[in-house]
Each structure stands twice: as C-alpha cells, then as structure tokens.
Image (cartoon, rainbow over all chains, first blue to last red; front, top):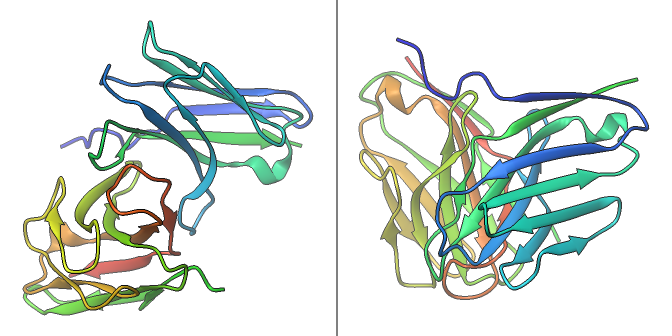
Length: 111
Length: 114
C-alpha cells in the first residue's frame, strides 16, 4: 500500500531568489522550535532555533518566523544558492518531551 | 573534535540476525538519542538517554534495545532483525540533561534487512 510521507513537498527556486519553507505544528504547548537541514546521505544539521517568546530570529542568510496564533513556522533563506539544496525539517519541543520532527520539505535550487 | 560518530556506515543483515549499532560523541554532552528515518519521512525517536545511567522509550521502541555504556557512548541493538527495520539510523546528542535542547546528529547507519 501507499506509504504516508513518501512524497515530500518540494520547493524549486532560482539561484539568487529568496526561499520560504513553511511548517505547521500541532502542539500549542510547544515552546521551542528548530530548523534542520539534511543533505543527501548525511545527518540533519542544525540551522536556527527560536523560542516561543519570540516571533522572529535572524541568522546568517536565514530568518525564522513564528506565528503562534496559527501555529505556523517559516524558514526564509535569502539569496538561495545551489548548496542550499537539501531537505529541511522543522522540529518542536514542549517542556522536556523529545523533539518531534515534521516530514520535511525538499528544496531544489535551479542554477 | 569529531562530534557524533556512528559505526558501521552500512550493514546488510538477514532476517533473524542480531547486530549492535555504535554511537559515540566527544562534545561532553549529557543526552543521547537514536532515531530511524524511512524514505520520505521525518525522524522518529526510538530510544533516548537523558543522562548517563538512564534510558527511555521513544515513539518506536519495539524490536530495539539500548545501552548507555558511559557518557560518550550509546549503542542500539537489534536482537532479531526484521525487514521492517530496514532504515537509516541516526544517533544524536545534546548538551544539557533532559531533551529540550538542540541536538547534533551523526552521519547515519544504513541498514538493509533481507
């Protein structure tokens, strides 16, 4: 039978454009969120995090936005480069419970 | 500073065979985790060790056992491998006791059970 999650959402962007990757979370009690990047054949790599008392956090070329009202998280990548091609996961934590990962979004950068 | 290392990188098993996946971290982290990742899926937590001497079940613990050998090492054992355990296994660690911390991942072990 069909496996849920086999077909990842895919985002294709032109090199140099900005990318926005979205994530909906379900637990309104989640108080800490992390974005991970996973390149083919590698383990997930930490990109940026945000706590629930913030609505925006910026890193190098990346910005995470948190909208607690609608339980939505986004990752913005400025001036997307070929090296940004990967699967991006959001993860949420509530208190001391283990990380809960989303299914991921595949970002393809068109040169 | 190697971070999180895992051995082996690849393994093929026959149904019913047993094996142990090894994980070590050199960041002096207190907490360690084992995940599995199936094609097109996110990571699912198998077991975790919030601190040395403790282990707890995650989302998908059936068919696995773990040992927190010391602060550095956390192993995952498959006693009788099944084809459903074909997956990529990732070990991770985090600094503080407890699980609500950024985790750092190893490169993964790719396991095929025939």
